[in-house]
Every structure is written in structure tokens, then in C-alpha cells.
Length: 514
Image 1 (cartoon, rainbow, N blue to C red):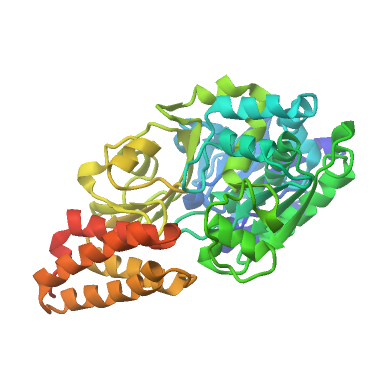
Image 2: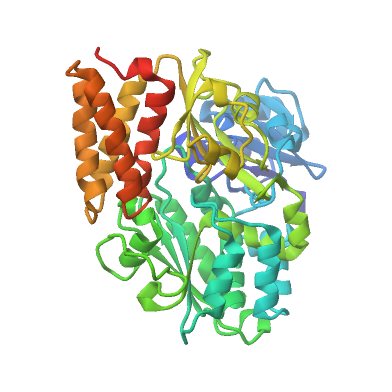
């Protein structure tokens, strides 16, 4: 009988697939058939421990045991070692939940990632799914917004603007039609948290957007999803259909009489469309170009209507806030940075992956404690936090707590939580040049400081590195950066100088003639 089959979990998420999880899953099915073993293969999402992928788990007496990383040609040895009964294997890691990398985290938003079948509504509900929406449909709009405001949730996409204030603005704005939009155009270097949510726990994003819609009186929602994420697009579309069929989306959400419809729109493949007004332009079928503000999107957004614009992690954090209460979420974190941070470890790091932890841990604790230092074993020279527009953090600053205000004091930002690690072989002068070149390529071209300033920035850095009038060009570079910061219309031009300035301030030995 199906109940007697041993559950074996193999991730279907993109990172695991890129490391061979499809071949591993096929091999497990084949070997089980050949050996006459009764196995129920579950294609779960990933827990985000990417250095262990493909991570195979087997459930024994209700406890999942991990083996990894496993290649297809190691599957035979798993069966020979009796892994279905908890037998010893060189790649055996013990109970998954006891792995220090996981056990020391505070998994709230990612509570189900890697645990459930991403497209099983039953599995989602068993693990607490739709408890938040069930409470939300019984509350009035003001009450929902009050809970989100009290939780201290701030935007997890970069600006860290208080979510409750944004929602209240949309709620009180005039407009017969209102919208909820999700910015899932995850383009920052070293980031993958949005993709991990959508591929591993898509219903949490759907539930969060539905709560947002009910909270502000919006009946339509759109997920602006990065076109380079084909699996996420496929899974989100399937999950939306399942939610509609089960009554969690549509004209009568959970029998409440309230309407919320949702669809996926593929992004335009441009970094600038990660900026909220450019994203709205693209959603409307136009070229992705920055809009002048005011008015803000909360007042005049999608097709001129009041519009919520939040990113995936922000919206996916809402269900647990409604389910457990504002104080439960607020108890995590420090200062004005409440709840959890989803740090993503990438670059030259030994244990790359996702870490969800309450705000307040230091950069060193995350990168050295969870990440294990560099993959090369060499000293860390710099960490770029917050994507390609983020400052390079110097080792003298590694004990700074990860919270928005502490990083702002450094002239740095947490942004979407991406942490890209560099060892002591990195050329920081080239990294400074890359920041300006990236801006020149990705600029929408609407404002002069960004469009022209980034090109001039590359030219000035090239002159410095070539030894042409170094001192005068260093002065010119700083003045150019100040102009871009003060005069650009959006964060692309306004923040592209941050990496350059951090190199000038902390790694000046690399910004000189070769």
C-alpha cells in the first residue's frame, strides 16, 4: 500500500537541477524498481543548502535524514548501505533539521522551503499554509493593515520602506480599481531568495498577495517574474491554477465574498525593470523607463490606479504575520529592523546558500559562521552587500550588525540580502570599474547623471588605472560620484557610485596606476 512506501525527497529546484538532481531522481526510481524497494519519490523544493545539493532525504519514523551531495552514480551505494532504513553511508549527514546550518536559523518566511511538495496544497496546509488568509478574511481592511504595520515589516527589496505605511497609503487613496503587484524581477548579483520561494513554496507568495489585496481593496494582482526563471514561471502558473480551483483565488476567496485574481507576467529582461516605476511601465506594455515621482505608485501606479509594489520576500512574510500575530514576528530582529533577514551567500564562499536569521547578526557571523569563509581557503578581502549597486564592505567593518540603519551608517546597504564574497586575490580597482560599466549598460537613459555619468566614470577609472594624471582624476571621480548620487532619478544612477566610493575609501591601493 502507498502508506508503506518509504518517502524519499529529491529537490526539483533550479540550483539542485543544475547540480544533477534530475539524474539522481531518475536513478533512485530505477534502482528501487530493480531492487524491489517500495519508494515514494517526492520532488520537493530546496532548503537552500546549495553546497550539499543534490540533497537526498529519506523519512524514517517521521524524521527526515539527509544525504548529500549525491551524484547519480552514488545512488546504488545508498541502497546498498540501507539508507531507506537509516543505514550508514559516507554521505550521510544525520537528521536534516539537526544540521547546524539549518538548526541555527530562524525560518519564518522559508519555513516550508525544501520540506513540502511545492505544488501540493494539502502539504502546504498541513504545514500551516492559509492560516493567515483564513484570519484575514474575517478582518476589516484597517485591521489587516494595522497588524502588518505593528509587525515592523519593511520592504525586503532594497529601500526597506515600512510595508504597513505603503499599504495604508493604497487603502486610503481614491480609486475604484486598485492593484497588488509583486516585483519578482530578481536581478541583483548573488541573490536567489525570490526564486527559491517561487520554486519551493509558491503558495506562500500567493497567500501573501491575496492578503494584501483584501487589505487594500484590490481585486487584481500581477507577479512580474524574471524571464530568466523558466521553472519559477512554470511552478507559479500551476500553483495559481490550483489555488483558483480550491477557492483561494477568484471571485469568492475562501467563501468570504471578496475577489482577488492573480496572474504571472514575464519580465522584459532588463535590470532597470527591477525599479518599481520602471516595472510598472513594463507591466503596462511599455519600455521599461523610470517615472518621475511624485506621484508615488501607491497613489498613481499601474494604469494610474493606487498600487502596492512589494517584492517576493516582503509579500511572502505576510502570511506568518497574520497567522501568528504582529508581536510574534516583531520579536525577531533588532532596533528598527524587525523580523528576519534572508541572507544569500554567494561568490567565493565555502558553504553558499540561503540563511534566514533575525536581524542583528553580524556580517562576520553570517559569512564565516554559516558560510565557512572562502571556498579557496584564503582570507576574505571584501564582501559586496546588496547587489551590484552595493558598497564593498572592508574586513574592519565585518562586525557590523546586519540591520538597515547600521549598514546605512557605513554608506552600505543590505538591499535584497545578497552577500558576494571575495578573497584577497580580487582586484578592487576592476570591481570599481565594473560598477560604472554595469550602470552604463543597464541605464534606461532617462536622466543625464546616470546615462552620461556612468560612461564618464568608466573613462575616468581607465585613466587612473593607466596612470594618466592620477591625483586629478581621483578628485574628478569623487565629484562625478557625488553628482550621480545627488542628481539621478532612481537608485541605479544614485547608487552605482557606492561601490566606487567604497573602493576609494577602503581599498585605495587598488585604484592607482598598474
